[in-house]
Length: 94
Image (cartoon, rainbow, N blue to C red; front, side):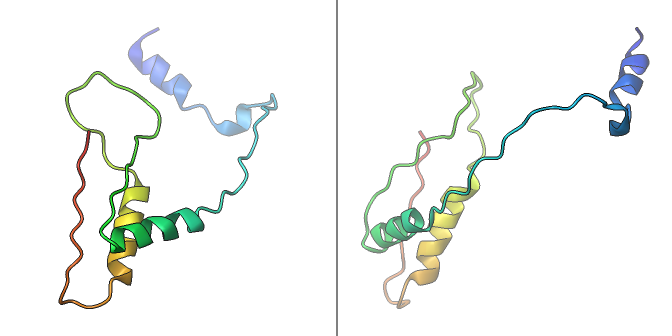
């Protein structure tokens, strides 16, 4: 088939799907206690280790950071009290 034929086949409407597909929903995981512990550690000047979530590649570029690290850093910065001692956080990708 020509490339344009394959593209047209990929655009078939979902209504044409007649076979049921099984799927499952993952339960909600409340991670607020973990975020609180990370925030407290960072506010005390502690160090945390963040490991990548799944997937490997052989490229030489770093993959984008996930939203969790941003939430951890911004959460600690938001809870910091007093501007006389700025919060210093370094992110070191490995």
